[in-house]
Image 1 (cartoon, rainbow, N blue to C red):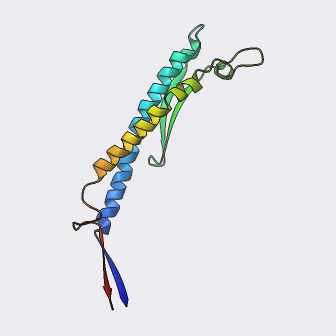
Image 2 (spheres, helix red, strand yellow):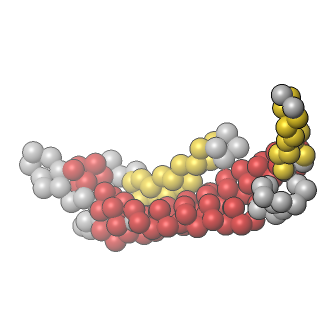
Image 3 (cartoon, one colour):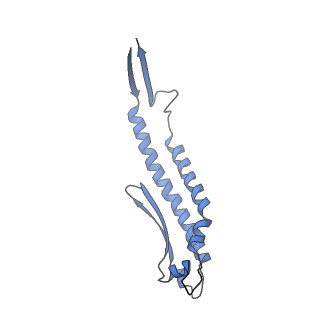
Length: 144
């Protein structure tokens, strides 16, 4: 018995996978920016206010490393005392504003990332990779 296999359209499949990767990175970066903006807005809303200094020093950014393989959303406060407000001290009660903002946006983050992946799949999925057509089909023959 002899088994042989031939991949038809392998180069097209590889190109489409790379296209998907590029689109997914772009879409995830855009959605991460939306999530960062929402968390930043909520952190400012929940931040305790005396002079407004803490609220005025809450910032957000998206960091992309290694061609978008790692996408980081960062919301932070550069006020020296922000950690004491967030977690409290032995003499001061905690006023959690950042953790509250993050918890409020957990579901939004999941929804945005799902939207990003759905969009990437939709944009990259041109042609058929299985079950018919001539692009990207693994064909095989069995002979005795």
